[in-house]
Length: 263
Image (tube, rainbow, N blue to C red; front, side, top):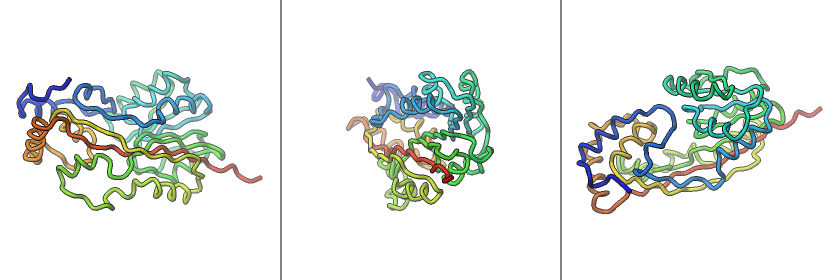
């Protein structure tokens, strides 16, 4: 079921522009957009690792939704923290994660982590803006694990290029799994598992596109409805005549271990 064709372009754009964008709860998209999920089931896999950890840190936790989902299936370690840089998300994550015993620390994404060396045996992150491999390695205990799901190269570029035109291949090369492997290894970590998938996304109306670009701000930097009205209108007309707009997300799973120090 979609709303396409039942409201005017102006109505749909206004609706997409009015939805709050804090946190990483994507339930508003139900019936308006769909995205296939990676086969590895990140949140469920994280829950298993949390049950085995004694001290955990979740980086760039957003509104805490993914970590909270994992903790609904597993108790938090005795020492558990999360970081987030965007103030509205800090407040949301604090409210959501406090009942689980998680301390949320407000810190910029590119700042050194405010924790002592070798504090955690599990560091996790879902969709970090850019992994700080040296800092991850520093706060991990010897033998500790980093477990993350990252956004890969050219993710949802069909939509990006509709608004920005053709993008050079190097535009998202920093997100390539092979480059991240090299960066993690350069920081002293050993890659245990690295898997990548491309997954189908469908946008069923222009309201979903507007909300998505307002929420995932790095897709079309500086996006506003006013600036991109011609592209929005042409995409709306295309969806009315052809059906859902199809794009593909790029995801990879990364599991890395900090070597145990030699005696």
